[in-house]
Image (tube, rainbow, N blue to C red):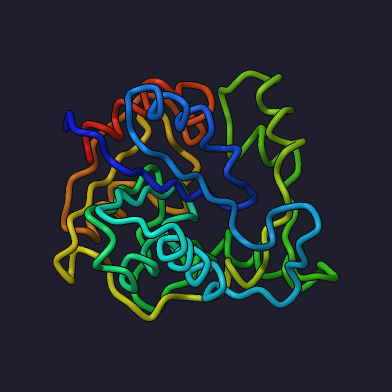
Length: 237
């Protein structure tokens, strides 16, 4: 793809628009329009207590309307596949294609907590234990689970930026199928060294009826290798 496109970037769990900013800068410098979103509950001053997955879907869909965006390439990272999928179903007239980058492709009726039984048990316990129902992300979890192999400086920077993830976002499911089942074009990009997903990325791509396109880096290469990830998004759009 060589023409200018509009990319709407949806972050993964615990993260805000900041996680996409290095990629967004490269896309912008190539002449594309870019919107990076921070979902409700993930900014300082937000109250995550009553938030549900439907609120995240409503927010993304509402931003597409509020900004009057059309022919959008909707891009999700990690857990962001949930609100991206829900919003794409709601706003078919505004979305040209959905790109999943090392992201969950939600199955009908399956929550994030349900994707991996061991992970799900830990996650549900954390939601129950937190007074506001929001799940924190610790530096050891970032080092060992989210960003293995990345520099300690980058790991520590991310640890200072993440916010507790609203529990409702993780235990609720969507009531819609993968977007390709309703004829919406999609692509699945998978980090070559990504071992941080709840299940193998190839399985998520298979839910779309697609083969994963391998891109450089691990789960958080959007921060450590943004130029390459931006180029991969442009090629897939």
